[in-house]
Length: 241
Image (cartoon, helix red, strand yellow):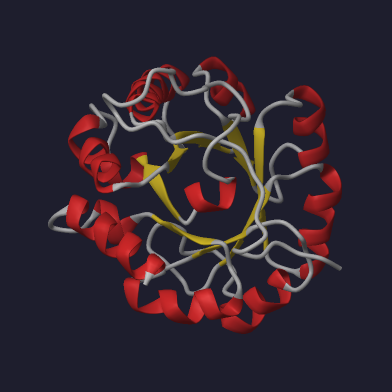
């Protein structure tokens, strides 16, 4: 089975930094042209309202985008729909200015309402095949823990999988930990880009790259850092070293 490799990656999406280029970034579905999808997901920032609050996302998110992050997942659990929508629209505006992807966690309806680029679904959420049928042009990510789940996500039409947890985290303390061995099994089971998640630090990146993952998803290590811009830049530098 031929799987994703850094040298042979395809994908979707251009990268237009704020103030640069003549064409506006594509929003509201699979972007076309430019940087391959795995490059944009290399350091994938999770903007979690449980960490960042329900206010203006700009004070945290703008510096992270300025550091070079080009994929943001909005996680808006246990907040009223109107609050989630208001924040999602603000995050969409910011990500569009930087040519960054916006992917909404769990909520296909919110992703569509906010003109996001895609949705990320867990194993207990709307089935991936249903999301693909309802939104053929949207980016689709699926959380997996096992090779079987990874192959099922690929068959359902996912564009990437998020695999983990590498270790337990404060943001998702009930996550099942699969460690490096479990991540390796997922990487070997699918042709899709695999994004590692779960308590990941900058020091983990060399081992994860050797394992063959396409990128890492990070929440608290950036959001709770004293300087989120510097934290995001440190992850990006470590990934490209």
